[in-house]
Image (cartoon, rainbow, N blue to C red; front, side, top):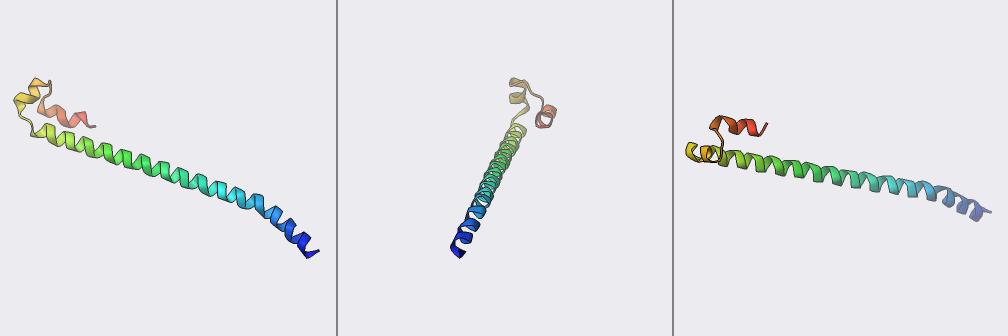
Length: 78
């Protein structure tokens, strides 16, 4: 009779443990997506900073050729 109750306990625990695994997998997947979005945002910020530095380093004549004034550079990245 102990074997029957042991099997019953396993059947009851099995769906609960399966649900826990599903929840944990979903949490890990969500964390990975969040990390990927954070890394993409960091990468974009680095590209913007690099572009701003490059534009600041250009001559006023070249900036005029591409249609920019020096005072417009910082406003482009807001």
